[in-house]
Structure formats: C-alpha cells, structure tokens
Amino acid sequence: MTQILVIGSEGQLGNEIQKLSKDIQEASFVFTSLETLDVTDSNKLDETVRNTNYDYIINCTAYTAVDKAEEDQNLAYEINAQALEVIGLASKAINAKVIHVSTDYVFDGCNHKPYIESDTTAPQSVYGKTKLKGEQLLMEKNHNSIVIRTSWLYSSHGNNFVKTMIKLGQERDELGIIFDQIGSPTYAGDLAKSIIHMVKSDIAQSIPFIAGIYHYSNEGVASWYDFARTIHKKKGIQCALKPIESKEYPTPAPRPHYSVMNKGKIKKAYQLTIPHWEDSLEHCLAELDIKQN
Image (cartoon, rainbow, N blue to C red; front, side, top):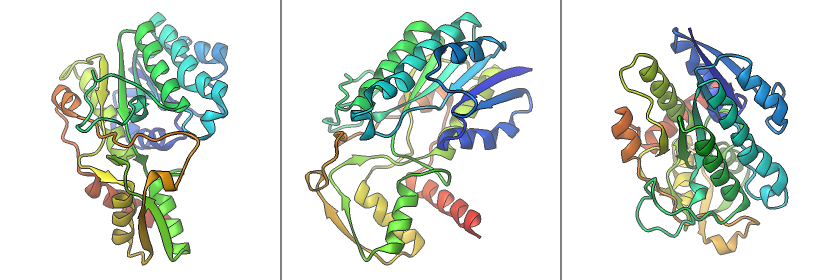
C-alpha cells in the first residue's frame, strides 16, 4: 500500500487534506502536527521521514506570521527553509516524492500581468525570503519534488481573512480595507483536492508525477476590499467598508501590490479545472454555517 506522510496537518491545508484522505483507499496516511513533530528539531524530522518507507511526503507546515517574521527571523528560517533541506535530504534517501506548498510572497509584486513560474523572484519580506530559500533547498536536495506556490489561503478551519472579516463586520459599523493590493483568494479545500488528485493520478499511473514549480490559486482576481465586500454581501453583513491605500495601514513586512499568478502550467500538466474564487467562497461560508449550527 502507498505510504503518505503529511507534515503540518493542523493548519488550514493540512486539515483539508485529512478530510480528503479517506477518498484514497489505496494509500495509508500518517499525519503530524506541531505537537507530534516539531520541524525545527532537525534530528527528529530526519528520523520521522526516514524511519518509514514513505512514497510521498506532503509538507503543509510553514511559519506564516508575516509581520512577526520580521523580528523572529531565526524561527522563520528554521521552519520555512532549514526544515525543507532536512525533508529534501531524508526523502531523497528513501526515494520519496515531495509536494511542498510555497507562496506568492517570493515575488516583489511589481508585475502588471500574472506571474509565471519562471519569472524572477524578489521577495521583499523575511517571510518571502525564507519561503524562497525553502523552495531552493528542497529542489536542490531532492529533484523529485513539486513546489506549489499559492496565495491568500483561507478555509473554515483556523484563522484567516474570511473569518476575520465576518467577525469584525458583525462587531463594527465601519472597516477600512486595503484596495491597492491585488491577488487571487484560494480556498484550501480546492488546493487540497488538487494535491490529492496529483497523488492519486501518479499512483494510478494516469498522470505521472512531474517535478517542478507550479502556481495554484482560485480563478479570478480581487483586491482585499473586493474580497471583504463579497464576504459581507454573501453573509448579509451590514458594515460600511471604506477602501484605503496600503500606506494608510503600514505593516512591519511589505506586501506584494500585485500577486496574481498564472495557473496554466498546473492546469495543463494535471488536467485541472479550477473554480472561481467567488464560487469557492460560497462553499467555505456554507461550511462555516454548518459548524456554527
């Protein structure tokens, strides 16, 4: 039976992969969380990967506190970069294939057309720099790896923009939301389905595992203001939203002003149909309603 290790299963993406794992009867999953596997413990991480003959390793863990990373540089590096070197070396030793999730923050956000995988990277934050280093270390240590860059991830699990906008919208009469940062919201459930599809296709030998870097987000483009407005509209929240510029809401870490990514490569390679972000948002909101009732 195919053996799959999922690292970081307590996060948004890992949680969605856990839900979908039941759909792969031909595979046995092992899920680790921060409590069961501290990826900053290189020896433990190496031992965990090597001790079972895994066929696939899916890494969902990351240091994602973008602003905090500016001060907490060492920990961000250990989780986002150093751990990937360990995973790369250990997975290579057991001949395992790796799928790792990265970010749009590897770009400087100065493009005016969707980024393709070969575009020049120029991260502007510690978070972006450590994530890029992790990509490089993994690909260097295990060539049989896939890196998926994604953006604006949200789900019904954990903390994210969607849940924050619902909470604040219900508590306040007015909110200022940034309108000059453009990207594509990504529902973690859709990304998880695509990752599971990639693994299942390789197991079934219908579509081979094609190593390399890919971009994945939901279809469509929005500003944070557009995203918030749509969330409130779909939830029937009556809160005045005021569009503001990034300079009116300064943060320790700079954000990409434009981080739309071209998904043509992954759609063609894996025959994927990706939903529009507004459709996926409805699915997420429906899940949240079920959890609350």
